[in-house]
Length: 185
Image (cartoon, rainbow, N blue to C red; front, side, top):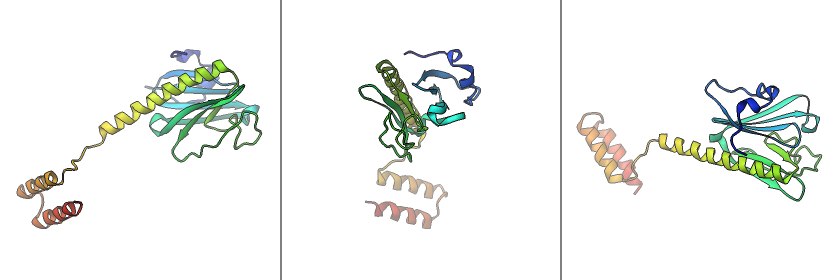
């Protein structure tokens, strides 16, 4: 699959997404119908157009930053399957390429792309790996920005004592916080 160039993406599809000035398309794939998966350096887009996807006179654009994505998967069986993005708050239900029910038809689900060949399934599996790696990078950078507080209660009490000594905390504030910490033991 490799990383595909932004200029290869059809112009009408590129116009469907709103990229920030510093955002770049890193890869894109076309599904079975008029469905596209586009991965930028910041987020993922799924674009659907045409009758088969339930968008006869328009398009549907599903977009989500990597930090909000729980995972990407491919479910492929003998002749058909689908790619699916999942996120917190989204109810994942079993899908079938042959279904006409809007709830189980991947062609009409905003977070799915239908697949009807083994080679396409393999390309989407590679895209899953790419997306899942980006999710990992996103969560790692978020974790590194989170301040780390010591779970060592005696150390925290010593720090509170220093704040009291320097006049930042009053005696009452110090005693209250000290009691809260000691109650955790």
